[in-house]
Image 1 (tube, helix red, strand yellow):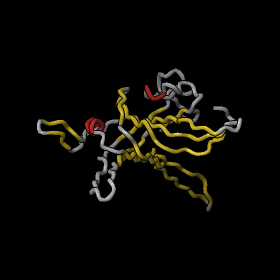
Image 2 (tube, rainbow, N blue to C red):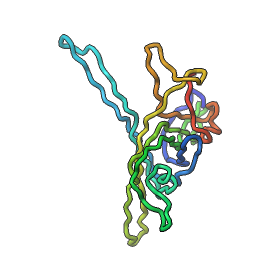
Image 3 (spheres, one colour):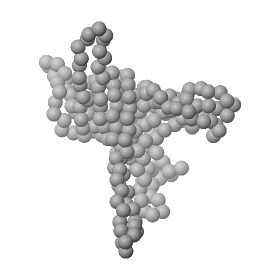
Image 4 (cartoon, rainbow, N blue to C red):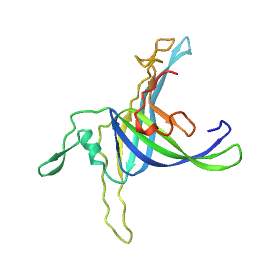
Length: 204
């Protein structure tokens, strides 16, 4: 997109997917995605004044709301198992790191004064899920009562690779950089095929 484009509003969520390694699968239709940063800071005092501030950012807490439970995802996360008598809920004994992809629509106004809708694509990296989707079912009355299912997960991120992709990038202060999510908009390199491969971010 041109730098003169004005972002008016983001709306909708679509094409939610999950990936274990580079094996990508569909979640099914989504209703909502909420992302909340899990962070805290501590101010350190000396001589009656603030001498330092420490930031502890632990990633993001996320909730994906779906129209239905994705049984394949639940099996992959170790919470369901196919048995001879049917699909069984089992006690979760493992935590599988994975990535989650979704798209949102972005209403923009171009520098030529044209308003149009584009699609923003996002990968959430280093995700873990330790809770089953919440379930509730309502009786149909005068209208059909639609059910929805909330899936909670944590976005822990992955390390930024160095420019060669051979190891983790370390900044001039000796810190490794953790990437929580990567987003592309129309016009970015690799935008068209962004959803086809889980990104492994490298220092530019």
